[in-house]
Every structure is written in structure tokens, then in C-alpha cells.
Amino acid sequence: MCPYGKKLYIVDAAILPEAIVKTAQAKELLARGEANTIYEAVSKVSLSRSAFYKYREGIFSFHNASKEQIITISMLLEHKAGVLSKLLNTIANAQGNVLTINQNIPLQGVANVSISIDIGEMHMHIDEMIETVAEITGVKKVDLVGQT
Image 1 (cartoon, one colour):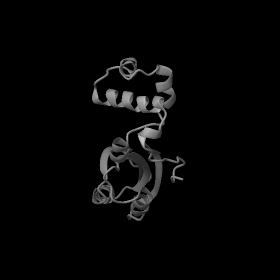
Image 2 (cartoon, rainbow, N blue to C red):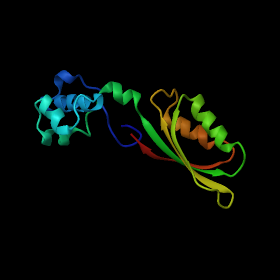
Image 3 (cartoon, one colour):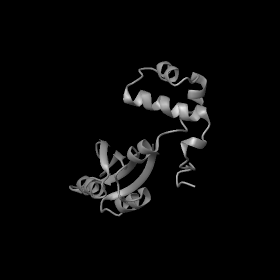
């Protein structure tokens, strides 16, 4: 079981039902821009829209799953020079790619910060990175709030 509640498998497409394989093909057409709408994509692969909607959240290509993983972490940081810089360096050293940073104005000496990170190339497990971030002087709290 994954640490975040989903159980995932790598399965040979040859053993999957045709509707699931065609759903993956339709999603790839949409991602590559070879189809502009879901209707166009499902028509090209001879799949019903209802089957597409049924399976679309449960099937994705292995290549995309391994390359595009995004997490969002929420933190409470002390309002001291260098804390955010140390945090960003920690993420960069783990090969995480920062996509967005949202920092609120500090109140009572602390600021709420949320960061979205592409972890597809990261050489550290998410839990290990969160523990490393939590150990930075000035980081008061770290929570994983989202993962795709």
C-alpha cells in the first residue's frame, strides 16, 4: 500500500480490458494535442464517452506517472533571514523542481508558506524530504497537503 492511501500496480496493457486501454489512448491524444475535445479523442479510438469518464482517473501511462509527480507542502516558517532560502536549497539539492511558492505576510513572527514541487526527478522519498525540511532551523511545521 502506498503511504498516501492508493494501491498502484504496473500492468501489461495486453491483459487490460479494451475500454481501459482505449481510455489511456484517448488521454494521450488529448495530452499531445491530437484531439481538442474528449468527444474527438474517444471518437478516434472508438470508445464511448461514458467508458472514458468511468476509467479516466484510474489509468495513466507509466512514462507520465513517473515523470510528472507534484506535491504541495504547507509550512509555518519563522520570520528570519535565510529560512526560505535554506528550504529552497534543500528542495533543489534533492532534485525537486519548485513550481509555485505562496508566502503570506508574517504575523507574530511566523509566515504560512505553501510550495508545489515537481518530484518526478527527485532522488529522495517524499517522507524523507519532508523530514529533512522539518529539521531546518526556522521551520516550525510541515504538512503534505496534496499529491498528484
